[in-house]
Length: 314
Image 1 (cartoon, helix red, strand yellow):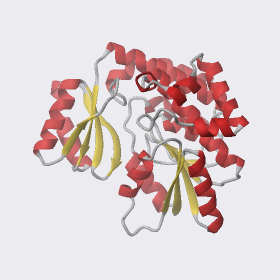
Image 2: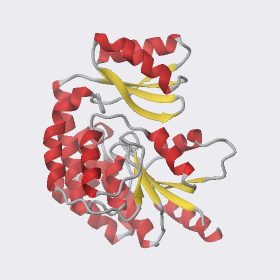
Image 3: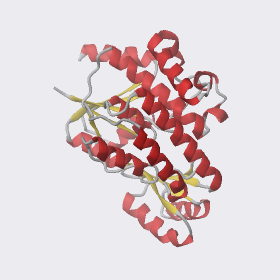
């Protein structure tokens, strides 16, 4: 029997209107939004359904908002008894994956992403940051450019998404320097619209306090295998996973390696659970062109119905 993986998106997948159709259709989805609003005291449903985009994309709002939609999409799949063997989430999305795997309750997931957003926003206000996507160079090439720019300030790899799509993060000067040198080597360097240098030393100030919040959350033994961003490996011990999540804020997201881990484990169906198609697009570049795996999205009512129809047809 083919193995299935649920993948949960992070910041960058948001859109005004996300989750609205599921909210209208299902009482239990409304309960998820109500829970998130009670935890955050933010009108999450208004931000998701009506925006404005500028307010939605502020990380203190976006982290709980996107997580609410991810959890809603997960809930509709759980209602249909859709089984999965692995899960993973990209950066922020990893908290949705922790819930999917049975490690965290919805309430603890909500509290953690809200505090994570608050702390990251605080550090971004203290330290101006930038991020760029480098397309066309390998991780070794980008790592070399990063190393050469380090004497000029903080810069690091934030995300290794595909073989030749890497996101860098850090202070604006060194990030621009790496981008310019990458472009000189024939790569495309694309500045990202972000409010902070995520996954860098510039937000290290959030780590100790967030670790305390992680310590207050109840981590359970996972019921499903979760592949972690920091290690690109699975883990079973709750305390080990808690410790890894404390490192996640300032560590690179090893998505390319994580997806390779799932591919090698025999996953043949990848389902992006949440808004947008960012991870599905990445996955099509990660997998070899002749790989037989299916890639699907469940981020809306129409996509859910299409997925269930395809699943019924085998």
